[in-house]
Length: 225
Image (tube, rainbow, N blue to C red; front, side, top):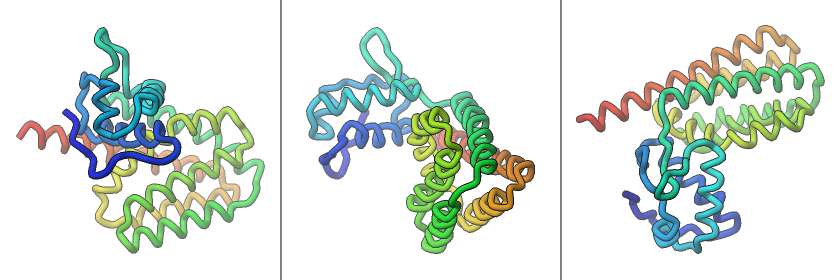
């Protein structure tokens, strides 16, 4: 069952905004597996027409979070296996993107600005801004890679990782260590130490995956009473 939002969704790109809201509910477990997603119900809840709802569901279906059932579309759910798959894909494409970016070189100042943004957000305890800077930092490597297909793959899954980060960052009482990790990655990239960078990136992504799985287990235990 859906809980009503505090305010209706309005503005441009309503489908993408609605997809963001529904994605967060799916990843956090607020929308359990097999929940049917009825266009009319969602349109009424968010005070939008059926068009944006249809667009949102199409986006989520493409991300593997929603699937077709006999009675329409339903939440596919988000399991331990899904987390493993997502991080396996991300590590594979990000290692390649980073290797290409480091080989090509380029302007690292936008990535440095994101690290500074993470440090500031950590000091303020601003988990959402930290997550935004975090993803922008990683996106810079895809941009510098010069490989448009890698960028397209990252663009497809970036919203899901944004939802994941909101969950994992909520568990971290101190975000400064994560900001320091990104500073280390940037330094290694600037120094073109790819082997050390690749090892650091693997450790970094493994930590993110572990925290997400821990969050899922904690949520399941809470639901079990």
